[in-house]
Image (cartoon, rainbow over all chains, first blue to last red; front, side):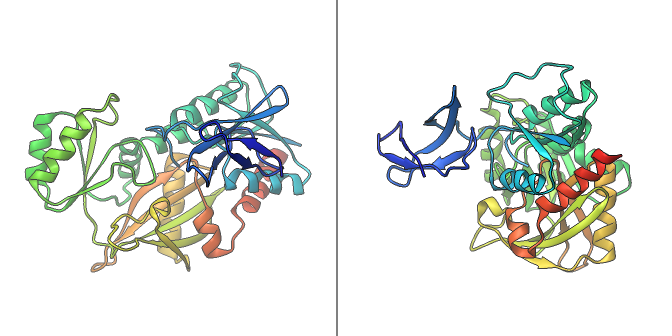
Length: 57
Length: 281
């Protein structure tokens, strides 16, 4: 399970191997809601967008 | 065979769908609509499964793929009708289906009239959104004034619009069914927890399986047909004292974690089976 750096607290975040681009993760250590970004084959985490007004089912 | 899965924020549901398709030998082309521009008229696959959390983005995604001749599940028309509760309720009512008495408030003066005309408590909600957001049980005038003030501060006209709705005393529960290809695959009852009156799973609501009786099945199928939905979840309220069923909401991009846990039904498998049958037509 690869580890990426949390952009908020710089701590390590474990990401499952089958994680998809855009998937959300909560960093247990600092509580940040993070989004997985895949670009040119590399993976990073960024702070996730807040819940949009039209989000839902 | 290939299916395109359009998404913006993959959840457990999308991962299960990918797995179910792959088990059937169907290749899944993943399109993150936040990172990939969508060319109008470009055909990515014969079937476009729209699993986008943002209602507006879902609607656009479906329309763009339909422009190229793809079958969107659900279609842009369905997503539009389900994504705006005023449109959903209006369509259901036009078909003669039972909905809670609902009034739409578009301006401050009409808010006063609606308050006078509706027995208290009543439910107030905006036409868009989900997971119980901004859904309020209005018991008195002070609460109503606060709701109006808060929503008036919002930028979007849709969030400044109110659906004032009769409160159905359902004992803190509602029924959720899932319809795939015109058939009800199962039903759960969602129960509110603690002092929360809303039953949404996103707010902690608990789900239990229930048997789908004829009345629930008929209502669900009619609701799905009314919006033209191929993969739809339907929320039904049952009046505790009269037993009358009311259609409350119809969802065009259904979530099913709670449903799946309660019933043991693999919704992703059922959907994959249906989509494969659509591709073979």
